[in-house]
Length: 185
Image (cartoon, rainbow, N blue to C red; front, side, top):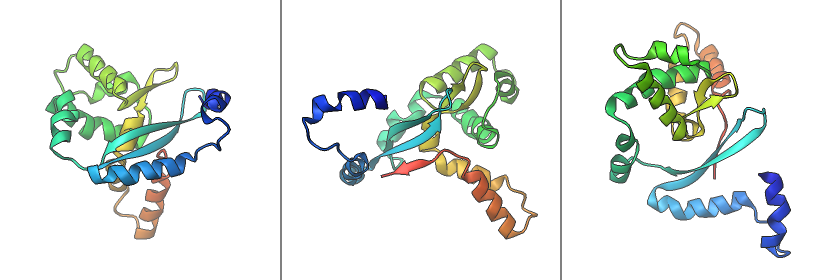
């Protein structure tokens, strides 16, 4: 994508200097924060081991619009609970899960075909993604953008409480730094 933009930028800039995206996003966010929105981005590696940047428009507070038109409108309560209490902690701590590993997390009585449909829908909505030809599941860019704080809590809670405070802090920072970087503008 970057190569394409570089090739065609002359058609649009007309000799003007290339705009600074960081400054552009900062100005956009300054105007949108009054409406509880902002642009954020996350960098992660794709299947070809290349860095990819995903941009997202984020609702920064849970308000009535979010409750009416957000996740609750797209998924039922059981699906949201399964994702937040089972899938998200497992992916946060283990990064990749096979379909078999996900199936083992399913509530008893869940039909595998329904679980597959649910996983595909999560992937379509960018909460999950498939990793390469091996077919492992991993968290998608939307999870990193919208659930970063929750993921950090999962990491913090996973550290052995018997360790001294300095060692717990070191392990937490080490694990937190393994998460993809979120850019706030």
